[in-house]
Amino acid sequence: MSDACESCVVSGKADFQRFGVDVSDADAVVALAGNPNTGKTTLFNALTGLRMHVGNWPGKTVAQAIGGFRIRGRKYRLVDLPGTYSLLSNSPDEEVARDFLLFGEPDTTVVVCDATALERNLALVLQVLEITPRVVVAINLMDEARKRGIEIDHRELARDLGVPVVPISARIGLGIPSLLDSIEAVSMGKQGRTTPREMDYGPEIEAAIKPIMEQLRREHPSLKNARWVALRLLEGDPSVLNELRAGTLGLTTHAVGPEV
Ligand SMILES: Nc1nc2c(ncn2[C@@H]2O[C@H](COP(=O)(O)OP(=O)(O)O)[C@@H](O)[C@H]2O)c(=O)[nH]1
Ligand SMILES: [Mg+2]
Figure 1: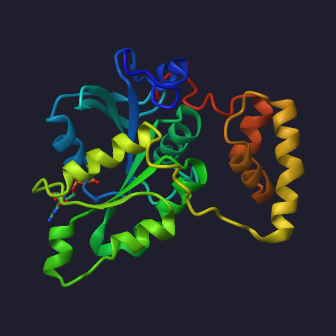
Figure 2: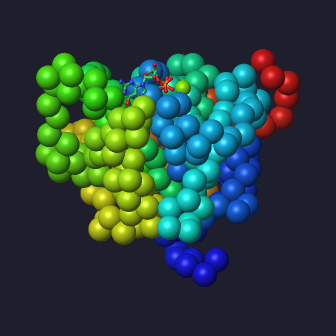
């Protein structure tokens, strides 16, 4: 790749294979996350022109759609994550979305939000920001919001969140060029550094997180996102604890075995 750079070349190709995502000819991997019904599929189609590979996530009955698009010659692989309200892994959909973000580590994650229900949608944005700083927030259905007289100060929201926020209307193609610019900038590390709002859980919890993270790093040096895992352990999340004990955390898609 002639325009290769450390921050833009797809990293950890083996990890993507594990998720059934072929990145062999891609320069970067982009994940689409969002609540159900926010226009993710509409945006996916607008970006990929309906050229996609449809299947299931390995070992799951959760549908997977993978497509591609180009920005100024660079090839982007686009992975549609299941629509979820959270990443708490209460359902196979949430687990797939969470694990792909945590352990696939896409170069950029676009969180698609519904402009007419922004507050509810921001819950997922904040959860994604806990996992990765390389986020673009796409506020979709802007046409519908305008009809209803809803105004959104996307610049202030971008300042608050510390990542690009782009108003779009996927159905009529509004804002797509700006969205592509932001995806390119974030995936190439050109956004300056994004400085996402960091959750500060207060001195007591922050102090508790530290030794757990250190132990995790010692005992599981290849574990990604140790802070996130430490937080789940503090919460007593049984699925994370069990997977950590079994050594399967991050091997999420339980690659072998029949589909259930
Ligand atoms: N008015 C309007 N409707 C949209 C827009 N994008 C998607 N929709 C509609 O919202 C509904 C849900 O869209 P879909 O792409 O299936 O959402 P998903 O569940 O997130 O994949 C569909 O009826 C779409 O036609 C948009 O920009 N404006
Ligand atoms: Mg959809």
